[in-house]
Amino acid sequence: DVKVTQSSRYLVKRTGEKVFLECVQDMDHENMFWYRQDPGLGLRLIYFSYDVKMKEKGDIPEGYSVSREKKERFSLILESASTNQTSMYLCASRRGLLLIGGELFFGEGSRLTVL
Amino acid sequence: DQQVKQNSPSLSVQEGRISILNCDYTNSMFDYFLWYKKYPAEGPTFLISISSIKDKNEDGRFTVFLNKSAKHLSLHIVPSQPGDSAVYFCAASKNTGNQFYFGTGTSLTVIP
Image (tube, rainbow over all chains, first blue to last red; front, side, top):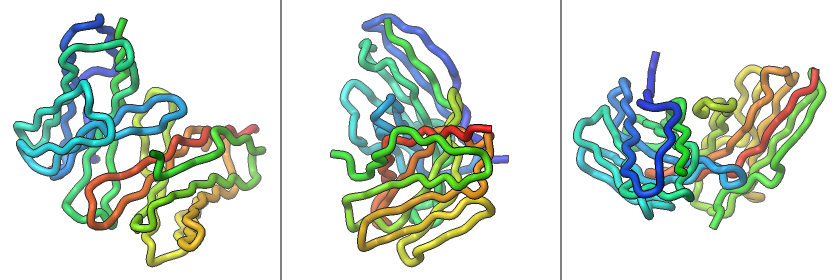
């Protein structure tokens, strides 16, 4: 059974704190993604990675960074959390380089609240 | 700039009837489309997909229709069941790209 695991389901942080969100997949997928989901805005791509140590910006990378040191692990970092980063964060992975037939597998999400 | 749009934020349907969820896209380069279902406090789960070489794909109670000329796709659920109550997202991608573009979601409520 394939699995994408996000380390924390619920986090509460204070403004200015550094926040780490961890994601691990056990499917040997090349591609990993971080999205945030907000009401009325759908899922918006923050960053993605198509290989170890490789990363590309998505639509809303400001205020975020990522790290992919191992194929199975993709971390999202909020250098200095702000209240507008309160959101549901979703990690996903996908096999291969071709998109046809390659759906995203999502983790259960991390609900972050920044006070 | 929203390249994938779901103009109906919510939809209510009686159990046993058909649910039709709609999605429009603006980029003619998109050639692969997916539907995801999401329950509260859970990650989205893949439901069904369609490539641009087809105009229909069916999987059990779920059928996705693609109208390339209108840049429109729809998801039909027949018959609708209370367990189908969830938020549904459509997504699109380009074969040459690496990114999926998601709509804003439609919240479906199936009334028993």
